[in-house]
Every structure is written in structure tokens, then in C-alpha cells.
Image 1: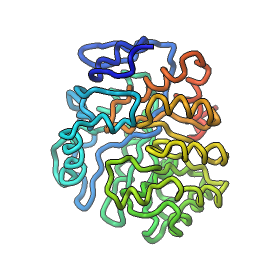
Image 2 (image 1 turned 180 degrees about the vertical axis):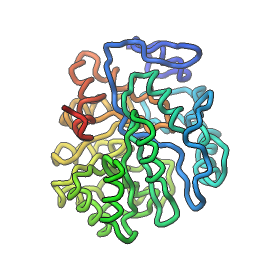
Image 3 (image 1 turned 30 degrees about the vertical axis):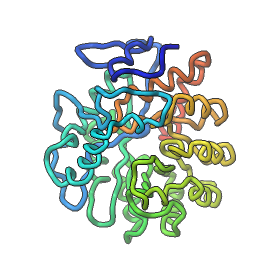
Amino acid sequence: MPDQVFTNLLDLSRLPWFDQRDGRLVLSDPSVGPAIDMHTHIALAYLLPMRLDLYRATAHTEHYLPSCCNIDFEVYQNRNFTPAALHALKRDLTLGSLGRGGMRATHTVPNLVREMDELGIVHSVLLPIELPYISKNAAHALEAARHEPKVLSFGSVHPIVDRVPTRLDEQAHAGARGVKVHPAVQLIRPDHPRAMALYRQCSARNLPVLLHCGPVGIELKSGRRRTQVALYEKPIAEQPQTKFVLGHAGALQMERALDLACRYPNVWLELSGQSLSNVRTILDRADPDRVVYGSDWPFYHQAIGIAKVLMATAGREHLRAKVLYQNAAKLLGLAR
């Protein structure tokens, strides 16, 4: 196989499945088949109302990992950030969230769909994140899914707010395919009693829960404490009827998340951010029917995760359709 370090995004065209077209990276091998991206976001807003036009197309998407950066497939993905790019990411997600510009202004529905079309992705799942009473990100994501049929959306209800069952019912009625929980951003442990109650309500509505899982190394210490994979076992073990998708497959604690997936049949692993060797390990040891592709767009171009799945399944191509499409389709209720 080719070298696993790429000088920039377009250098992925050295791989046999990709090509360059008008300065953009595209999937050129039709045999790869359709894909579902289980982990994407459009611009989020907190404190102030959304000030961006989420339906505005721009010439380029400003991914948080710039297309000019080196991409080493053998490290956790955020290790490819330069100090300057990491600083820009943090500023855009904090102070930038109060304004109308910045990189966030390109994190829109048509920009996501354009990238999907270039890579054979038939559905992307939006994962909104709510804070108590100062955000309406779930409403924006669910509206986007109604506006664009290629986009699906999870809901988000912060566990400490009132009327959790009613809010879940409203989001399910609006088309939510599951619920996103982010312990680091929402500042609540995954095994907190209020979080446990939320999972039970999700299970009663047959809504899978996608949890940001594992420390990623660039979050605040408060978030790092709340995302230790050991904290996820209690809800998984005590609520076997709830379907838990561990986002980033445990991030920097992949082995612990993989252990949970091997021991509990209600656990799926979502691959965004993982190194190529870790993707191979997961496909070696996990139930291949409970592993799904995700990109974490717009942090990263969607092709990066696809490329890792394709490389990891070389010689065992029968797994590709499962990881890229079939497993997610079943989880989301799309399978016929």
C-alpha cells in the first residue's frame, strides 16, 4: 500500500480510489458503493441566536484541519493540527460562535452535500449539541434534515433541563433518528443520574444514543475528566435495551471502548478520528455488524475517514459495505 503520510488533502489522490477534479478530491472508484456518514455537524450557536445562513453555499469549505496540512494516518487525527490551526479552531468554536463570519460560515448544508456528492455519501447524520436553555441547535439540525433529504439528524436534549420526555417526543416527531450526548461540551458525566434517565427515555422511544466517547487531548481538563471511557460502562451495562454508539470509538482510549463493544451487544463503534492501525484493530476484533464510518465534518474532510476504511479492508472487501453503509442503515431504520 502507499505511504500512510500525505502531504495535504489532495495527496490522497495517490490512493487507488480517489482522484482530483477541478482542485477537489473526489471518489473515482464506483465499486466502493454508497456510504453513510454517522458523525457530522453544521455550525452551532450558543447564547445568541444563530446568525449564520445555514443554507448558503460558498466556493470552499474551511475544514478545521486545513487542506494544506500534512495528514498522518498513523496518529489520532487531531494530532495533525499545527499549533496555528488548533488555535484557529478553538477561537472559531468559542468567540467565533457569537459572530457571523469565520470558518463556521462555511459549515453549511449545501457545502456538506457538495462534499457528500463528490464522495458517494448518500446520507450524513447531523449531531447537534445543546446546552441548557441557551441554544437551539437541535431545531436547526432537524430543520436542515427536513430541507435536505440527503441529510439526517439526531436530536439533543441536555439531561438537566425540565420536560425531557416532552422534548424528546417533539424531536422524534420532527424526525430525530437518535440523540447526541457530549459529556465534554455539556459538562455532565455519562453516568450522571440525569444522563441515565435520558438514556432510558431514549430507549423507550427506540432512539439510539451517540455519545462523544473518550478524551481527544485538546479539550479542557473538565471535559477530559468526563469522557474517560471507564465512565461509560455503567449506562451500557445497566441499560442493555439502549443502543449506544461510542463516537470516535473511544478516541485516545480506543482499546477500552473496543473492550466495551466486545463485551456488550448494545454498543456500536463510530470510527471518526481513529488512526489507520486502530481501525484495522477494531475490524479485527469487534463485531463487524456494529462498526460505522464517521468523519466529524467539518473538523475533517469526509474523504479521510473513507480512505482509512478502504485501506483497512484491503483483502477483506466484504467488510466495506457493512462499515460504510449497511450497519448505519440498520441502526437508523433505513434498511429494507
